[in-house]
Length: 246
Image 1 (cartoon, rainbow, N blue to C red):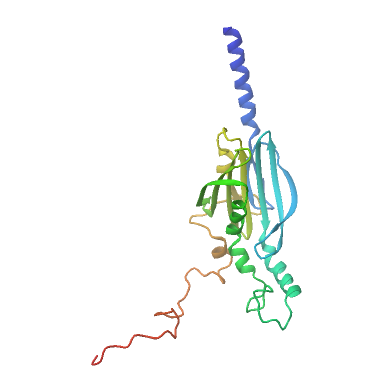
Image 2: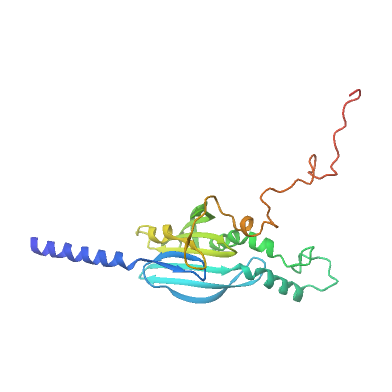
């Protein structure tokens, strides 16, 4: 029995080492990210429907191993200005005054600024529509790129889902993994998510990175200027009248 036990332990150790060795860091420089997967992911093309109705081109990276599922969706929001401008031109008559109903701003452009600035929140809202119980929702960052961290329990099979949603260089990233309810969290997948430049080199910031502030300083300046102070906040707000004799 001792010999059998030793052999069994040896086999389990070898299997465990082989399983651990399956995990590797995969870098996708065209989509600007890196992450650990347990195997080579399958890559497919799709579209991601933005909050303002644009069909954003996207890539999906998936690995399925038994009851474990790993997925990264990358939606290219650099296309949002063009797509929403085109959509606005098709849906908004020239003499129609309600620009929001037809997708135009006062400047005559599609609502791409709002769409892009709210992309993380929009993707988070999508998770909240699933048939699952939310157990954790928090502000977080990965390599100092800010985003949302989500944990849920599937109502049907009680599997646990872990996700991180962020935006970097005008691309929306949705990292998600699902594991059985009694399995440990997908730590390798969660903690390895990061960013790379066009040459595949790792990118890490010295302070918190916010996509709209970093990539669109003309829209979101670092220090907004006041238009005025007082009641109502405007330059023309009525000012208090000083007491008589002063």
